[in-house]
Image (cartoon, rainbow, N blue to C red; front, side):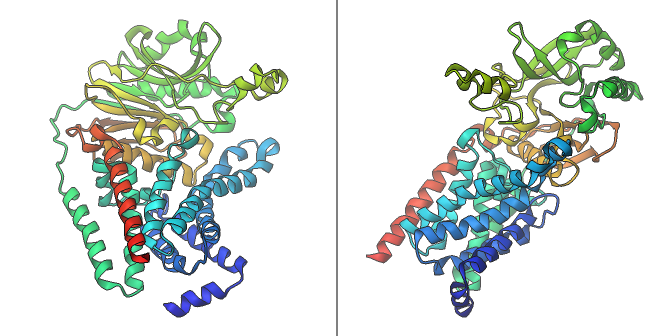
Length: 499
């Protein structure tokens, strides 16, 4: 092992950085759709093994940045898909988007490595803890982007149930702990490595034996309707009625459900323009409550991406406006400021986009109960799911993943939805335009789904909810406090050993 570390240190810089980027890409194989979590653990272990030979803080930051770049370039490769919808106009941007996204996200890991090298040089435990802290910051800074967190690699395993106690960041901590433990074993620190792995397995075993949802036999039936409108046709006026008629047909077939759900922006018209035609939608649902996504404008001409709950006769009972918008996708950061400082031409060209909603959920679903509404991007933010004192019956997520193509993006988005269900102990109804639409139970298991790239509808009983989880009560606070305590302890240990 020592010989390998020495040989690595003797290589030219481009070889070291390239090797770490490849290791990072290997770590990305733990994310959906591959879900090969051992690759993530082994790649992290390799990083921790090589880290002690790096000489100073600047070099540590650069080397860990290279590892992070490989990880994010692999995990976020779907970011090119939106630019391929209209290749002639935007296709040239695709490689730059991937490079910038990978390089930018990796800066958080580089900062962690720099701090680790300054606080406790060569200590892999400190690097691991600060990497977890970097993932927390990545989830919050600049509106946050908690996609492809290291903890997401456990979604398809029973270890994912840990999220009910500490959310995605506790899973990330366990991922890093496993990587550190394997590195210890490789460096022949057998006792510490085995004890660490044993603690992880013991925790996983305890949470695996948690309570199961109890079915009552009279669970409401929800119809998930997936129109499969490709993004390049979705807003084409020639196809608007074709997709609407498909939604109406799929909603009206078979037995009468208790609830019908359509995806985000299911209707390619403004709500303001179809208010007189809402009875047509209600008739298709045959009197069952209908949830659908649509855009609308208010009296000040501000645009919203909305979720509508409609009752019999076309009666709009609730409207939820998306609150966490996608930067550059749904609004242009700074466009209003540019207008205020006089750059009106530039501001007008950039556009302001959608306005964030201000009224939180839940929304009431007749005959079912309260639902936490989530529109697309909002489903990736675990810490933003709130609902006051009254516990809701379900999570309700509508999305349009057609932007992401049919590769990694839709699978990773679905994986995060499964974690939200585990964290809250609530079932989730997830309906996507082109897939993957799914009914997810309170343990994050998929009870029924519609695959990518097909149109159709499925009727699925709504699974029962579990009692309120620790995470639903306390959020990220316990894990944040644990992370701070462990980091402070690691610092004191390093300082003591250096004295």
